[in-house]
Length: 116
Image (cartoon, rainbow, N blue to C red; front, top):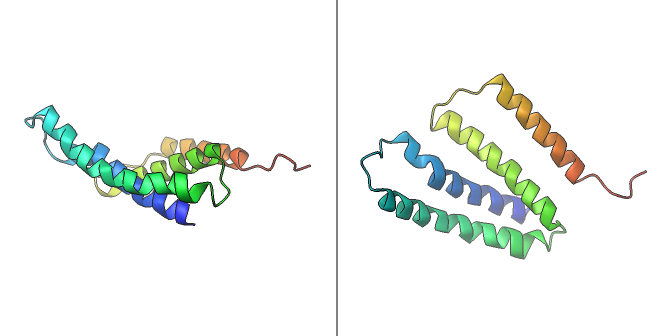
């Protein structure tokens, strides 16, 4: 459970670092400054991502492939909430269908190999 919580927090920082500036008009801001601000925010992403994968994830029995899959699903969920609430983007039916296909991929990622 610590893995999931750390990945969730990590992805909140990552999403804001990558997409938070889209809410404001940053076209006049120097690109280098924008990159440094994003890196500063992304530092906290790594503060949670590294323990989630390196310390907790493997100890909780996840494989590296499973950890990456969990991270991607959390990333999509966090981005979806962020885009709707913060960026005020509409949620369309085809986004839902694509997320359902991704959930199908998750199902097969965690499908036991020895199941008959």
